[in-house]
Image (cartoon, rainbow, N blue to C red; front, side, top):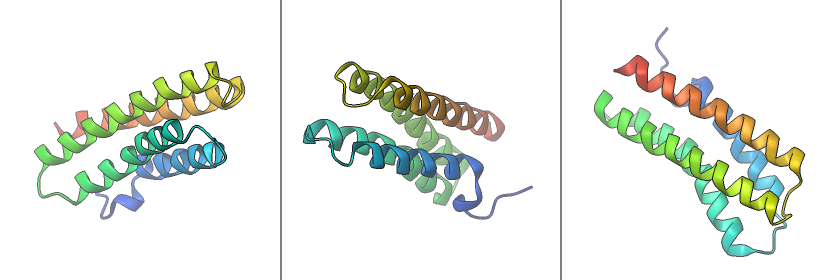
Length: 115
C-alpha cells in the first residue's frame, strides 16, 4: 500500500507522539539550553521524515531519513544525561528510550524498503 501523505505513515505518527511527550516532560526545565537542544533533537526526527517524504526522489528521502535516525540517537543520548542530572526520573527515561528505539527501527526498515 502506497502512503500518499507523511501524516499517514506510522513512523511519522509515532515520532509525533514521541515529540509531544518530550516537549511536555521538559516544558518546565530551567536548564534552557538543555531543553532547547533536546526539543530540537526530537522535533528534527519528525520534521526530517516529513521533509524527506515531500522531496522528489528516493535518494533524497533516504538522506532525510538518515538524518532523522541520527536525531533519534541524539535524543537517546540526551535523555540518559537528563536522567543522570535528575531532570527526569528513570521511568520517564526508559519510556522515551523505548519509544525512540522503536522509531529508529521503523526508520531503518523504511530505508531498507526504499533501497
